[in-house]
Length: 231
Image 1 (cartoon, rainbow, N blue to C red):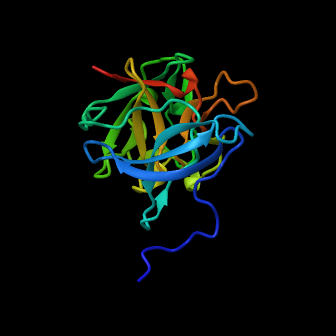
Image 2 (image 1 turned 90 degrees about the vertical axis):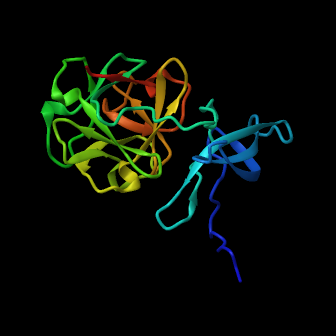
């Protein structure tokens, strides 16, 4: 019997900034909580066998199909040895961007589907207080205090870059699940399960929306966040 079905299209392929990924293998982290793909990639376009070894996490769709995202060309967090939750799910937190110093914010304390997530100067209001709901798959929902029945949401589980995030009625889907990749110094990259792209503060990026968007992994402080518990 067949153990799988061949995809009509590549499931892991080059991008405009990564070239020739190949010879993949799959492993779990030491603690068994993470799935990793290991592969090699050309160092630059046309480099042929001048290549580098790379590794990154992948996940699974609700239908049981592996989802790899796209090859990442920057540093990622290391595989987990012993799983430690990055947050306390009973506390509220501010989510502060390292690059801009601004805080994730729900405009005007909005409590309606489709309100976009922005960053704004710290004002100590409930628009800037969030709880994290844990899930059995070790991904988290981000719940605003001002909209407790809603969660951060990737609209329609988009796999497009430069998509602005919103709040939407909690539904438990991958569109509303996030992982926190510790990059050192208490700084995290926040990654959406549906897209495997990183949440990015675009408020000081020329020509951007000014909202929190999903973008490819970058070596940028605009993709690093501090999770600050509120006492």
